[in-house]
Amino acid sequence: MSALAAALRGVEGAGTMVLVDVLEEHLDEAEFRWLQWEKALGAPDFSLMEVARLEELLLAHLDGLVVGASSSVESVLRPAFATEDAFRICAAAFSLLALGEVDEVLLRLREAEPEARAAIRRALELSEAPGLGARLLDVLRREDTAPQAEVLEALAFRQEAPPEVLAHFFTHGEQRARVAALRAALPLPEDAARGLLPSLLDSAHPSVRAAAMGAGLASGVRSAWETCRTAVRARDAHSLEAMVLLAMGGSETDISLLLGLLDAEQLRPHALWALGFSGRVAAMEACVAYLEVPVVAQLAGEAFSAMTGLRLEAPYALLPGERPEGAPPPPELQEDLDADLVPRPEDDLPWPNVATVRGWWDAEKKRFAKGTRYLLGRPFNGSVLVEALETSPMRRRHVLARELALRSQGTLMVRTRAFTHVQRAEQAKARAASARIHTRSFDSGLR
Image 1 (cartoon, one colour):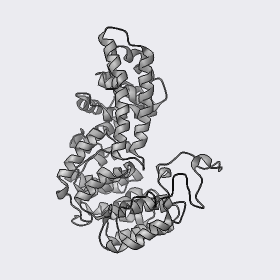
Image 2 (spheres, one colour):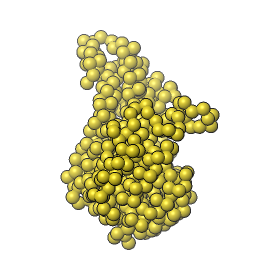
Image 3 (cartoon, one colour):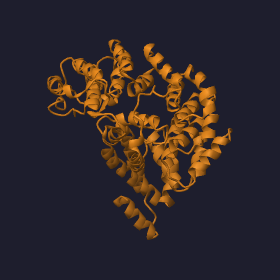
Image 4 (cartoon, one colour):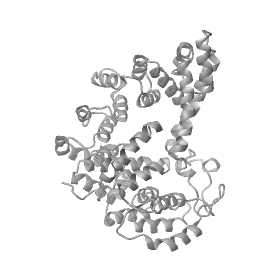
């Protein structure tokens, strides 16, 4: 509990009215800390431990709002929903749920505009309010109530959607609902794998096809793997998920398909991202070659680091503020009026020092054998996958958690966008079962 929250508790205990401006300060801080926390969950330069420190500050201010409940609900929390700030709405909805105001939050979800609805859904995903999962299931079964896709996504995130409920949404009219159901259903029920999966793999919606590939692979269906390969061969601009699946579960031959994408400038960033999960010597060599191409040098360095275990810090990275010759200016300094000025997570990646990385590779590459997959510089196995999930930068952990889920057929799930205490508990379960995680290529044993 924060010092400010402790003070509020003492004031309330004395029967004194809590000052509204103090509660407003809590909400202002909770809004800002929530924004920081969400950004950190996808950052290339944050670890789980560093995210936990940000999270502690966020939870302290949320606690302050709950402690001051008698004054905060009417004067601070309810007015927050009239704003257009998503993170302020997240904080208000989360606090109301903690205070037991579940009916009010669900009503607001039903009546909210799309952006506010997404913010309320995020609070529903993270809340530990007693009985909330059962209430969400009840809402989901009443089709005339809150938007079903939002409720289904919340239930799927919370891992509280029963298999029969997920199956009902495999053919739902709303694309988001189908995606949420497919990503949560690992493995698919046998009848869905036989009867529905072919049409889902052939969907006109890229996100549905991608979710169906993952669900099919976790269910041991060969057509899902062939769809994955076909998407990569077709050089589909929407095939990032297929590229990543091929990288994490493919053979040396499959990796050559990804390497072939590097000659397409539009696909090169996606291909480098995917190759970083392949752990193959040929991918390492390709990354070293692209260290000298400024537009993708940071991505190539990140992928090389993930595979080989070389930490990109001095002397293997340029000093902060240094940029190689020919590097594009930071987004805020670009003069092109058509340029996308929104910072991307990869903008925070270190710039590799090409000469020193090349020198390291020349000295170390003899210990990396062709035909072997590496992660963090070690031959891939279940223990290494779990270790990488525990220690890798936040933005890579989402893919690693997806691989863990697929390789365990959904029995080992780490929700990389949950609060860190939840993640640590799920990681501990994965660590205990790491010896049983299968490490074969995805196409082995498919039916």
